Length: 332
View 1 (cartoon, rainbow, N blue to C red):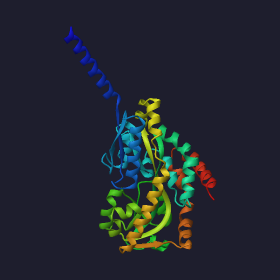
View 2 (cartoon, one colour):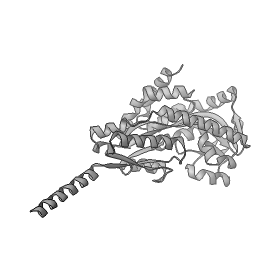
View 3 (spheres, helix red, strand yellow):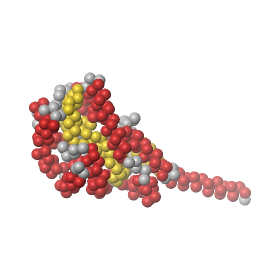
C-alpha cells in the first residue's frame, strides 16, 4: 500500500511538473539589428520585462542580426506564426502593409519632433487595423532615422544627379524619389548594393546614416549628402496567431513590457550624428544642402507625390489625408 501511495504521489508530482512546463511559453523574438546597437538594447529590455511581468511564465528567445532571414522573409514568418515578435523596418512591412510606404513619401516631414508627434498622437490608431488585417499585432513604432543620399561622387545639385545610375530601395517611395530627381533608379536589395557599386552597376543610393557608415559603404561611395529627404520608421509587431493564443493576462504582460520608444529614438539619432561626425573626421566627404539646393530637390520631387500615393495600393488613398492631418496637427 505504501509503494502504491508513493507511486501515485510521484505520478502526481510528475504531472504537475509537466503541466508547469507546458504552461510556460517561449516566444521567438527576432530583429535584423546587429549586436551592440540601440535596437538590440531596446529589444533586450522588453524581453526582460515580459519575463518579469509574467513571473517567468513567458520568456523571449532573441534572434538578432537577421538570424531568421531577411526582413521580408521574417515578416512572412511572423504572419504565419513561426516568429512570435518582430522588430523590422518600414520598407519590409510595406511589402504586406502597403500603406506603410506613405510614411516614406519624400519631403513629407520637417523635423523629428513633427514625426514623433504624428506617429504617437495621431497615426498609431490609423495603422493598427491595417497591420491586424494582415495577421500582425502592432505593438509600437520603431526608428531608423533620416534617409540620406550617397555616391561615388558628390550628389548635391540636380545636375549632379541627373542620369546617374543609383540604387533604389525595394519600396515605391525610393523609386519615386529618384525619378523626380532625374536619376536612373535601379531597384536592389540592400545586401547587393556594395557589389553593385564595386562593379559600377550603380554609383550611389540612399540609406540611413547609421547603415551607410556601419556597412562600410563610405569606403565604396565616400560622398554622403545629408539630404534628409525622407524618414525611415518601422514597427515592433506580434504574430496575431500567437497573440490570440494568449490569455488576457498574458497579453497584458507583453503590452506592459513595451519600453517607451522615445528612448530608442534618441539613442538612434544621437548615434547617427556621432557616426557621421566620425566618418567625416576619418576622411569621408559629408555634404550639406543649402536651403536653395534642398528647395530645388523638393521642387523636383513633390510633383510626383500624387502619382506615388495612387500607386501604393491598399487603402493608401484613404490613409493619406489622415497622415497629412497628423502632419498639420504636429506642425509648430
